[in-house]
Length: 511
Ligand code: MSP
Image (cartoon, rainbow, N blue to C red; front, side):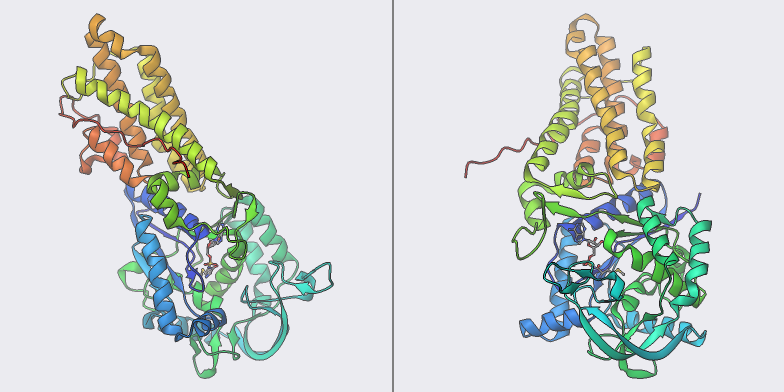
């Protein structure tokens, strides 16, 4: 088994405040990072902010700030959000860091020296909002006849001198690469879309700008700053110390997973591998793109005023319910709709009722009827073994599901066991056995604590704080919470603390 695992989020644009879409990518990546740590791997989890470009320059101007002051302020908000969401990043990179700039220039030089960059002039339809040029055939004509970018953003005809990356020469190599590495792009639908785009023919890519200054100077020609996507993508290797590939961190390359939103899959699955191949650097192992959230059926937008602020959600509902809801509600990879009622339902039905009650019922009976001590394992029935055997499969199932980013399937698998645990406790009725067969009662409660230990261990990546509490209540030491620890049974007789409910029910307060 490979011992290193590197995962990244996109670096977030600092031209607006963080919203639930950003939180979503970060939480999903966090689950993957935490799961791999739990599985004994050395993890490098990278996130950060993307701070150059014309949009940022303009946003700073509108606010009457210098670009640097402006990005310092907004980047701190993103970092604050990550900390509050319990995102376990190992490095928060900012593209305005000096070492990142040097890294970008080094990569540029490497690609240029290998003959893949030339100076030309660019004209075309440019969308400021997408920071991207579009071909005539990609534009959409609105009912009033105006042409806009596929995202709906306004486009302008621009002409400027520009350095180009010879992307057109990479078409065949890219297609061959996709064929040879069928897991490189996920989900499948996105892969087909990108392959079709490449097959339709690639144009050389404009990778510098002269129309504004807020960017990284092109080595040897300071009239030009680098195209913000060139600068941004390089963060993934500058964080590892590129061009110094002899340092420890470089062992994490190639990255195992770039997790991105669907709208930026193309930059990661096409431009990025082409840049890397041109520089003779290994290509990432996988790019997975998730879908988009709408809010109560509508697109999230500042003008509609329906932007969901993640920290407000956390204040109201608590962090772990929010993390759980975002990953449970929608099949990962597809689009989803955020609704307050759906969140409350998940919280009350699946956290408070299913998991919360199972834990609370089991642990109160252990506390009251087993002297507050973890029961010894005893003689088990076929029903006991069946349930235990299913629960013991969870680590293996989850490992396989998370390898293909099926986060929702992983949660469903855990909930199957929780539901089976509830059916088991109802049927076995240990509270009745207390008088009639105390020995059997102890066995039943021990089976239940074993099930809960497995469930809580594998759920740690999803809900770290709550599962920490639950594992403590189950008498599991902090040093016994890795997947591998599940291979050993806990010795009976440990004193357990008085149980406390972990997932309160949510009730709407009257307005
Ligand atoms: N700066 C670039 C990425 C450069 S990576 C080398 C960028 N930044 S971003 O701030 O616009 O957004 C990044 C992430 O937020 C994407 O993964 C995107 O999908 C996610 N989301 C933004 N709005 C979203 C929703 N409404 N729903 C789900 N995620 C969305 O792109």
